[in-house]
Length: 122
View 1 (cartoon, rainbow, N blue to C red):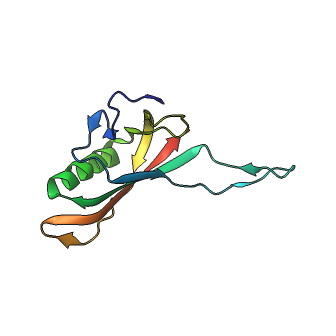
View 2 (cartoon, rainbow, N blue to C red):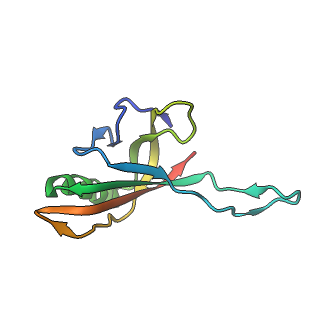
């Protein structure tokens, strides 16, 4: 994990054509409880990225990233820092990209487009 150079959402060093409408770290559930009652959490996290309205060109870029990673393995993704006192982007390597989810089509655009970045080691 390093400080991202782009300062924006990016995959393998390439900024996304359309920056997301929103993003969030997906809460994790405890894996168990220690003998003295403390929760045990995984060091692997997931991040959800959402777009309200996207063009086909924007969708193609993200789908191309996902297809390339599916064939070659993992990606480096610039995301807002999981732990930070400021809104700073960091590059997380070894990430996977889940299959994108699409909403309905509206006037040559897609609504409610969503991807999840997984296997993020914190």
